[in-house]
Amino acid sequence: MWQNRRVLVTGHTGFKGGWLSLWLAARGARVHGLALDPPTTPSFYAACRVAQCIDADRRGDIRDPAALIACLAAARPEIVFHLAAQPLVRRSYREPLDTFEVNVMGTTRLLEAVRTCDSVRAVVVVTTDKVYDNREWDWAYRETEQLGGADPYSASKACTEFVCDSYRRSFLKAAGIRLATARAGNVIGGGDWAADRLIPDFLRAVAAREPLAIRAPQSVRPWQHVLEPLAGYLLLAQRLLESDRFAEAWNFGPCEDDARPAGQVVEHLCGLVPEARWHRDGADHPHEAGMLRLDSTKARQRLGWRPRWGLAEALARTVEWHRAWQAGADMAAVSLAQIEAFETAATAARREAA
Image (cartoon, rainbow, N blue to C red; front, side, top):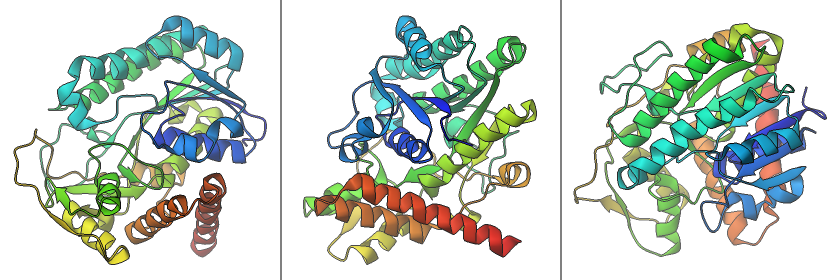
């Protein structure tokens, strides 16, 4: 499927974009990347030498129409994965204007540029599990639930969903371009150094030999290894090439049992890293939802996608990756080995199901 397939990944210098670009290159795709510089130092992109693994590494802002058009003209992609974004809730409170500009207008500019590129057949726009109007209920959100968002990040991503639906129905379907949006859970994995995220904050606290302060240990999130939703994006892109029936919104979340409180996740991590300690942060913080679950029934039934690594395996793989990085290992090789192990688990699961 992916051998010599021409692909554009926006946001390839980020955490998820880096993993996706490495995976695509390993499958033989001709990967072109468009992004700003890596958002953190260190980064997955630098640690795994992603630039050396892909065909073209281009810098540009997705709000810049000229940069987008030039990149599409050079890449001539058949498939576009749009991951470039401002992805942090707490940062969105500090920088709401930038968040809306990047997430909403950046996506709009990309889709407008895609209309000028006759090679594009499929587009996967990555949004988030936080696009739903969160009512703090116990059951999981389905793709048909009402969209919304209290914080600027969630609201910007809900707006992105509306932009995608409008472009799909107004322009892209008639042009033969199939657009789908993908809503994933709280992803974890090696190479994430972003601020205000539970696992990176935990690893930073361990490195500094300090206890981790957790804002809301009772908050429930749909935790999953980064390779889980990426496998969904790859499968979704393949289905888009086959039929326009898949040009809609999709959830990619973990098994129901892996939607856990943050405190339980940290307790499990402390079992893997005995020197770690944590306590509850009693300071005032901006509002974040206390309960969030995703229902991925549609992806399982119609795409044949399903989670492969449970939360315990995801946490163990994350710690394994960071220990290898601290030891000076070849992180591209480590990451590719984890991808291979993930694919092996998928093959075994399919055989058991058969």
